Image (cartoon, rainbow, N blue to C red; front, side, top):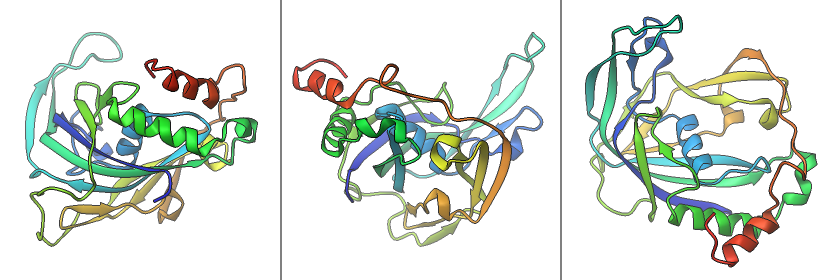
Length: 239
């Protein structure tokens, strides 16, 4: 696909929290990463408000295993409490994603240089990302490296279909929808032989409003131009 990159994510633990399990202070991970979690990883690799990152597919390479841990999270009112968090263990995913220009950002039209963005995006994947990579939660650090999507042996090859039930797909923010509100999207994915093909955010069958929200404003004074970033890359500077 145009402007696409392919990469592999590995980590000892992951926590893609099912929001239904957070009501009592506990946390239980979904069996697979959500679209929003993977989009967050893509944006940690390379992000600018000029772009909208779109996750196309994920391939689950390792067997889905879970491990529970007793935790002592800090309470809002001070002090600690006891809780039980259930993590995914020994995870490995292949991901393919691409970027599109954010047409809800006419103020950043000057920054739309497709070739330069794509070159920097690929360079950032090779470097392991511009920011730290986390698998759903900050305590679940991960590592990114380039790969050929679909290459190699996966645990769920020829496994058949696994219906994962209703899951959170992701969150709509005002700067990507043009609406002054934050919304949550739901869908019912099916994993086929280890592969999950994501539908686009606008195709999600269930969308619920969460709260009113305004988009942050950007201009040439608070966004580094793609030309400056590309010049840094050509000069051998760290991105």
